[in-house]
Image (cartoon, rainbow over all chains, first blue to last red):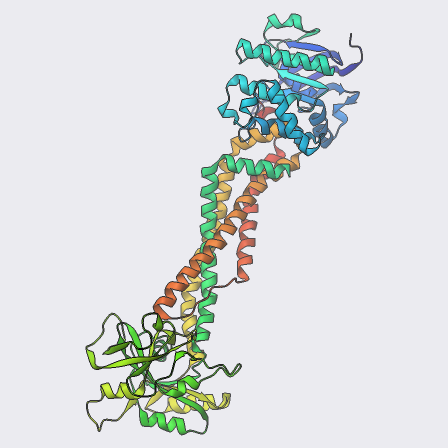
Amino acid sequence: MPSTPVIVVRNLVKTFSLPGTTATLTALTLPWLEIARGERVAVVGPSGSGKTTLFHLIAGLLQPSQGEVRVNDVSLGTLRERERDRFRAKTIGYVFQSFNLLPAFSALDNVRLALDVCGREPRRARRDKARALLHDLGLGARLHHLPQALSTGEQQRVAVARALANAPDVLLADEPTAHVDPETREVVLARLFHEAATSNTILLVATHDHTLLPRFDKVVHLPQTALAPS
Amino acid sequence: MLALRVALQNLYFRPVLTVVTLVVVGLAVAQAAVVLLLARAVENSLVRASRPFDLLVGAKGSPTQLIMNAILLQDVPVGNIPLAYFDKLRRDPRVTSAVPLALGDSAYGTPLLGAGLALFALADPATQQPYFALAQGRLFAQTFEAVAGSQAARHWQIGDTFSSQHGFLQEAPGPAHATSYTIVGVLHPSDTPLDRVLFVPLDSYWHLHETDEAAERQITVAMLRPTGLTEVYQLYQEINRDTVAQAVLAGQGMLRLFNILGQGETVLRLVSWLALVMGAATVFLVNYAVGAQRRRETAILRALGTGRWTVFTVGLAEALITACSGVVLGVMSGHVLAWYIAWKVQEASALAIRPGFVSAEWGVGAAVLLLAAAAGLLPAVQAYRQEVASHLG
């Protein structure tokens, strides 16, 4: 059973000021969360409850309004921006809800780009690794296709391959099964769970699908957020 | 390196926009290059064309017309001067060489130049190389023999015979003369408009034009080479004080002609600068038009761990790559176009215009890159400052 917490969240609050008003929106309130290496965690809650915001905070894409996020014993708030960029490239694998593939890049190049940004592998090995990942996800015949030429399920699998490319410590998947058919859903989930199991990677999945919850070690429930005057 | 790859991939992904921008920048640069190249080449060509002519003496009238007719073989002759007047100039101790020329006839559009043999002895003072050297055959030795200039020799060869016509301009030839000329020699290129003429003895000219034995013989132009610079100005002033003829300093006259052309060049230069600014504006518009796509792409790159400076460089690199390619394309097509125009002008006038690389082209290239960098700066700064999370779906 995993024990050492890799992700530690304390008194986390994220608010956004609404343009043109004096009101602020509290997008997320999470008093406490600890996730150990290899744990599989589902994040559930109604739309607008802050699931994506939580993921952005863990990825260092947003700064907390209050509280702290620690990953691998480092408080993300203490990192300079350049250090947060490096942290994100090396530590986080992110499967976005709308995939966010670069439209000008082929499936292969989208995956390779993540490897290039991280720069951990030798240059020549990156292409082979990207190719192998896509083959594993059943996209061997679609390597050189642009995202617009891929089906939704295929785009989802390319996004998963990109997230796995740098063997991250933390794998964030924002509603990875929302737009795909049941067959693709199983392929995607199987690959994510396999990665969590074999690489001892933390897997955080935001989902509305409650039938998936028994597969996870832990479920985090986020309440509805509130609009408040400042 | 990563930024360059992303920028190239983006340009490749929107081929129509990229090609249109490239063509607009390329055309602007090509236009500027053509103006620069031809201005310099025409100036050099006019200088080369005037080299054999130190002091031109012709009938009173427009000096520009004298230059246009005698050196550039354009326009109609101003008039004639008496041979006796020429003989007086030839005997002047301040004159080292005097060549009489007669213009006014042509053969199937090729101008005929009646000339004294002294023309073929004229040499460049610096190199002592004759301006009009024989390539084949021999010089004319008797009446109704002819020597073809290098460009005229494309249509005529040794042994060919032809009848001349009165009239200098190809568009309006006069009636044909009865007697035929025979070509006996061909000259090397002289890089002057005289390359496109058929040289004939003055005697032949007089023979065909004299109706009255007692009539005074005349020539159209005298080419004088004075002994020194002081003598040039003395003769210039003395001849112009006379009522018989006018003297024109060939070099100065050509310079004046070039200055007249230069007014048009100034306008073209201005138009070229405007075109370059429009090219840069196109780069800016294209960069700006793809803003939504760029914002999303920037957010994705940043989410993957790419730094701010990398996404800044992507925006700038796209503008600079397009501008660089446009400059290369423009300079290349500008050179090709300039050579084509030069070839057409040479075909029509025998002015040997040779557009070479001019240093001002570096200036055009640098200006375009600078303008493109300015055009790419705003999208690059926007990418640098962009907030990431809100642009990720």
